[in-house]
Length: 502
Image (cartoon, rainbow, N blue to C red):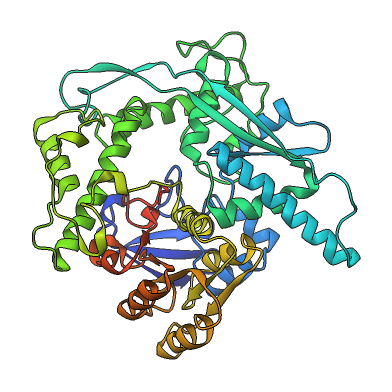
């Protein structure tokens, strides 16, 4: 896939070539206009077309006219339609006068958002008046939890298999708890910083599901499922006054023509999501969410296990990958309790036990994997700075700077000279909690000397955290030299740039 800039007298477009899933022949390609999702018309898309260099400059400069054309955006930077609507609904239900709301994935994320907002506002007050903020209570940030009932029973294939394969069985979505932070409206900027830097986000699919559960009859009123666009989409234009729908999809009362058309469109989108995305195995039924996550973790463990075997442990048994293959072969559903039945295997290098799904932690996005690793090393080695080794993707550095009062050491070249600085200047004078690096780096594509970093870590006791998103764990065998490997699944999963994960 390649993006090449083309210009016409009327519109600016990007040419997306060699994309068979869009019906392109590979010769003519597909034109993607400024602001359109990539691929075009893709629900939940996480990429948007900025076809010229000037478009990218205007985007970074927050040009209002350009931003108004965007139908989507990266979900850490842009609240997609469904997420906006869920936050507005929570704000209408829970916010006090002058407050805004943000929905977060877990109770811990909500607590950390509260701490971050208070810290940032206190720092801003200190910077303005030249002294600590006025004595008294910190900024009031309320945490609210709302448990939604289990979703209605749906039908899919046999338990433990892809939906649509074989006989059908009813499954029920598990209950969901919404974690809401309510804060003064002037603190919304700080809360958005937390969302962006930490990656503790809720996905548009999660928001869409919650909206379905919250509306009358289990159906969304005035909301278009599958919409992944920005605030200019049809969901943002629809009115809350649209007639309520019944549990069977019927409409009560008179419905204006526009509302009726939007209701029909919503039904068509829902049918597409259910029939195509679930029935043909693209998305599993939501009642199988826990099993889907387990399968995903086992697949990842299998790939990493192969990487370790290639790195020198010939007797390593790829338990996760083997179990996943066995399950796929006979259609079993894994209950998550069979680890005791797994045969014992030798330890892998550096004392790490055999790699399986227990060693894989899924996160909402790749940046949240980095943030989670950062929080772990903070807890293990408190009161220390970390080191950013090499020029990283920006939010990796922001995490270390903004979430640690001590800040971090930034060795931006990531070369042999910086390794000498780390060894002879930093480590000789202070302990550090961890070294964060990328292999290779984004965007400079530089790879640090992991052998030497590992040797220094073994002597001085710090953790080595490697982000291998650019190469990804299929191609980069970095685990034998790292304590934690982080990766953005967003970049490699689904094939259509419409999922988030880490």
